[in-house]
Length: 228
Image: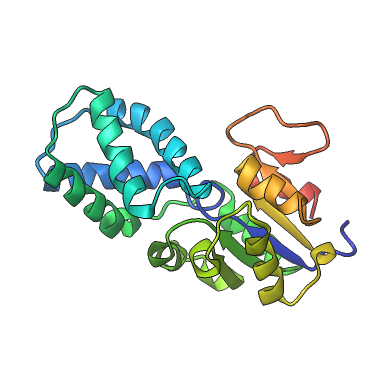
C-alpha cells in the first residue's frame, strides 16, 4: 500500500476539527446572547446523540438543512423539558452557524500528522458539512494550506457515502481510486462509502466502536504513521 498511495483524503468534522468541543463553546456564546439559561453539560449530553441522529437523517436525504438546524435544538430542549419559543430556537439555529467558527480546536496530533503526511502525499478534504462554514473552519484552524482540494457534498449535490462524492474528489485530485486512501471517523459515510468504490480507508475510531476485523483503524491521529 505504501508504494502506490499518492493522495490522502480526510474527513473534516470529528476527524481533524474537534466538532464537539468547538460546538459546546459555541452554545455557551449563543445561549448567553439569546438569554437561554441551561446547564451546558446537561445540554451537551442530550444534544450530541440527537445531533448525530439528525445528521444521519440528513445524510440519507430524510431531512433538509433547515429541518436539521431547527430540529436538533427543538428535540434537545424537549428532552430537557425546557419551554423555548420557536422564534428563539430559529434565532439560535442561525447564530449557531454564524458563531461556530469562533473556536477552532483541532484534535491532538492534527498539525503533526499533517506536517508528516504533506511531505509524502497530496492531501485533500471530503466533507458532508455545510459549505458556508467548512472553508472558514479550515482557514481559522490554520490547516487550509495543507490541502490541495476540498470536496463538499453540497457542491456535488449528494452526501457521503454516495459514490458520486468520492468519484468527484478523485476527479478533482486527478488520480485513480487505487492511488488514494480515505481517513474519517464515520463508519458508514467515510469508511464504507470509500470502500464501496474501491478506495482504501482507515477509520479514526476515537469513538471506540466495534469494527469488522478487516477495517483498518487508529485511535489517535499519529497512529496513521504505521499505515502511511
